[in-house]
Length: 125
Length: 106
Image (cartoon, rainbow over all chains, first blue to last red; front, side, top):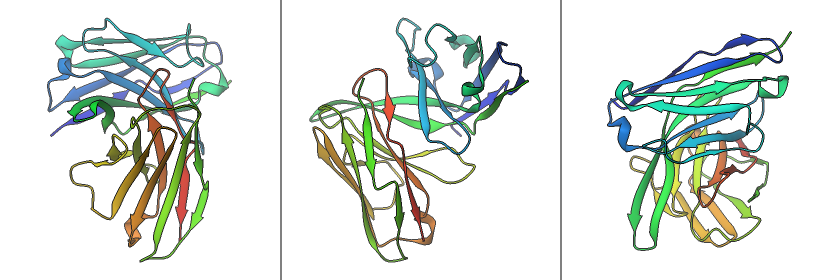
């Protein structure tokens, strides 16, 4: 069964740090780019970051650039998100999500087809 | 950055209805658009990618269309399980962006 399981969430004070992990199973982790997506309480989805299969390409949302660092360990089938200088605006459920790609007549198409259940990060004093 | 605007934000409908949700991009994104369904307390689920390609296992009552800047998600013959929040997302460029969501209510 294809599965993503996030961990590492919790309560942290403003200005603090937290490291999220995502354990992948049931597929060849090293063959897929991976995303982090978050959702603040009662709000919509916000894309956070993406890392390519070999970690050679990394992208961030402007809201986290310079504070968050995405990384992966293909040998351990794991994805990480190091979060520093946290503020209340970072309070959210953080989802790990697999990036898939298919080739069609109109070109290559990317989409996020497998999601974990999420881990909750609360930034509060 | 590309902004996605969904309309309406809230939609009231009944079982059996046909509903349409629109997603407009701030600039052209070809047919690079995906639709997701999310139920309370659950992770999003992929419905459609490449604007109109149905993800495996998704019921055929869901359909998508559009290209460029305007896209639609249509649900024909609403089922009780379809009452949820729907999001569009563009994988055309970085940063990726989602629409603000459309909550479909009874």
